[in-house]
Length: 489
Image (cartoon, rainbow, N blue to C red; front, top):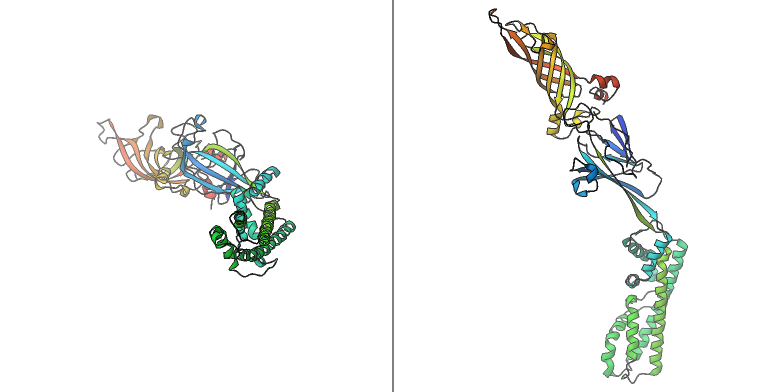
């Protein structure tokens, strides 16, 4: 019933049912006109032309949506309000570029088809440089890394823990990590981090010792000035840890050391502070400066971490759109050649009329209230009402042999140009495309048995028949017809 044409717009549709298959071709990256046919009442696949299965990290998605507007599509093609989003769904394509359309289309529907190509490509040098600079200049991000180092034994230190934090931050900024950092560079940075952390650990250990010695010499009158800073160092002094290059003292808050050092330095600038051994004070200040410098070096090392990711990727989306419809193009009853809402089937059968006690060959046409796709079985039609309209029709035809009598009088044809052929009207029900059960009425004229009465009466006789739906023209042309489905498993 439907003839699939070449579509030159967006995708390659491969329509199939079991073994039989037909093709429709469209180019995904172009947008063209609206007179494009999609199949209906049949399952089918969609294949993108030019799909490259070897292209890594590429994904295609397609969404079919119904259009509310049935006229002037060219005028309203950009009006997104026309799309019924509730009917939308998405197809994920397999690695060979094929996506399965999960539903069956109904005839005479307009569709909007959106195709997106989601491809992951390597970021440019400029894009990579920009995002790395942002990470390096982000104090909040640097502090997050510093916090990662807190309460971590260097024996258990793993640079991948920091790498995961960096990757998470890069992902939040729209970048994708597909390749591991350079192993050699990663190991060098890891060793540098361990060295810096070890130096900070040792200096902090020394600082605590010096601080404890110093605070014992401070006049009690100034204890209030020292207490906010003393509590922090006191919390460190509760932990016992060796002075080593490979152990991180539990409790050191690297993210806070900068501010603590500044506060401690400002404390020593208080002029009222007396009774402090100048050498002890200088010793503490030197330790503070050393720790401050070491932390600065640590931060410089941390700044280099994002540079270790030499390959960053971003998502690139290509978008295409095409409008199409599941139009019917033959056996029309109403509408025009592109918008049939019913179909006519030629019929040839044999029926029996009890009143005439005769069987008759007959031909005619059956009007069905819904177009069907002869390429697929009727069982594919979804919905009881849709199926009822497709299998039930009105019959109109005539017998091929003359009607002579019905047992009560001489019979003759009711239509002059048909001679003595009987007229057939009734209802047809087809379980399959090619065969139909007919419940008809046989109409003819009957003469009165009284020879003095010349007036003829119209007689109506029930007739049960079985007929074949045959479109002879399409049959000889080899086009899809009612017998096509006989060869479908």
